[in-house]
Image 1 (cartoon, rainbow, N blue to C red):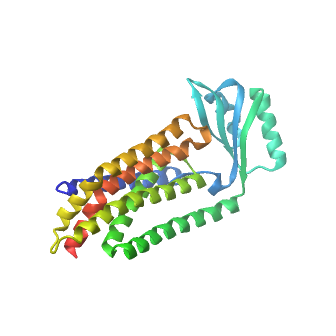
Image 2: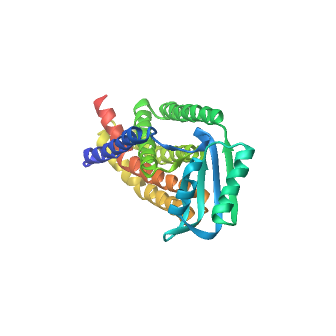
Image 3: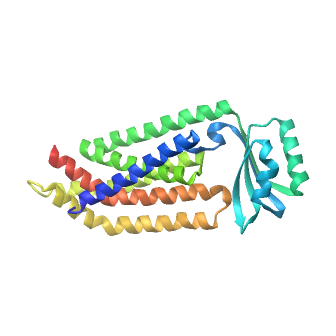
Length: 285
């Protein structure tokens, strides 16, 4: 607790960095996130060529086809697996595009294919935003009911920290932002709030045993008593997610990376921000 101002400053620095990334990407690209076809509409092809293809060659030969090319698997300067994001295509346009691929790069295997209309993408964007707001509001109501308002406020502020830091890294790395990212963010929120509630539950127990509590001392003692459990649980979970990222397929790597970042942010907020924030609020109230 005696280092709480430093923890607050570091958490604030993480949030400020995320906001700076949001502003920079908005000014340079017109979009905060690299929106996937779930939100923008379009077509995504994941293809595997029989022979390695240089990324520069692929970009050059498809530059007039309105294609956004993202490498899936790299082998030095040439690749075999590519993720190609194009405009929304009709059946006739898709046949033309497959002909262009085969004509220029020979035989290939289509690993996956997605096609989503622009109107559906717009609806999903609105629904995803509403869902996140409802979840955070529900968390505040639940924790306030179970504990008290200051506990709920501290918990929601920590969740906002986790979400903003995670999304800041996603925006900085220009990862595809699609429905799986929303699922990752909601999973992170649930995981983080679980660790925070464990700490607040111990705080409540310790407050019941003192007449005139020193909230900072109670928060410090409560955190120390569950610190090992929180760290080990987070560490083992992050190891599992890291294994998914390293050994999982290309389609799940961005999801696993987002989860890993979010779990790290959630561990920091639960351990270093939640109890100190609560102590500050109770002391000021």
